[in-house]
Length: 208
Length: 197
Image 1 (tube, helix red, strand yellow):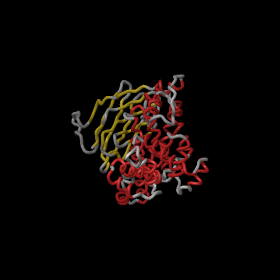
Image 2 (cartoon, helix red, strand yellow; image 1 turned 30 degrees about the vertical axis):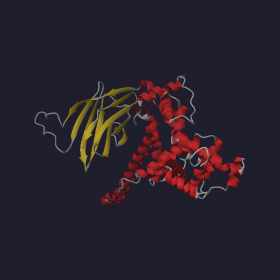
Image 3 (cartoon, one colour; image 1 turned 90 degrees about the horizontal axis):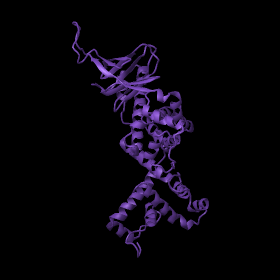
Image 4 (cartoon, chains in turn green, purple; image 1 turned 180 degrees about the vertical axis):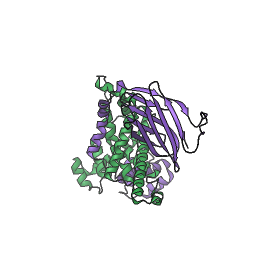
């Protein structure tokens, strides 16, 4: 396995007492986190993993890989990210880099798995028939990226807005307003205006 | 719409997007005429659609923990300051070098390349394998301290470990321009790109 030597050199500074500027991990941009990782800030690395774990895991799962296989892809993607930390030219497009890397590693694993199966069955033709290079069409990946962006924006909102929008849009069944109002400790009539305010803030964070 | 703005208030747009309120004839007429309000309504609907269809699951906690530990593990396992990076240069390529002493020139059977550094050579042999390629090689030097090898193009990458003879091989390699990186405990040797196919 190859290592980004400069990254390692820089990262080693975190163990030699180099101070890194304080950073708000929740609200930091990808670029800020990447730059901070390059300076050897382990917490920024953890924040990147937290931010992207769902997206990276979703790619192999959407392609139909089981939990173990998806776990393998997941680990490989983060090891690769670590190793190439200094080679990422557009840190603010990290989400796209991660999705592309996860897709490649997913394809590779699928391809390996199919070759193994065809070897076991001894049927060379089968490998030719079953290899499908597009288990992850672009529109699915675009959707995953967009959903990730929205979740990241949501995480940048205050807790009350996060709670409200999560109850309204991320639950299988939206609870009745009376229940939401009780949970938030607010009059039922204020749910609509609060929702609009929170939504507007979120769109702003999304740059829309 | 109100006396301060000719547009539909955002709170009303979010209610319309959720289809909680019926669109009044006045609002319908405004939406038909106002591209700003209709595109904002569309954006809200689209965003709600993304949120409602977001069924992505969290990765298992132990996977997340392992990924976080990559940072410390890599640094502890490999003394970074001791790592020396060396770019090897191509000193022999059977595809371009003239054959010596009556040896047959390049055939379709394979191609040999030698990359050299001050302290070691890398012998690389490339041969066709169906529509793809097989790459085998050996790190030639005084001793073999072990290590691993990464083969990488823009579209493909694979890794392998050096065996006790410092050999490595990769099968089913698609066409592309590849860099080979060999990492031993104290060196990272990289080759220039090798075109296959």
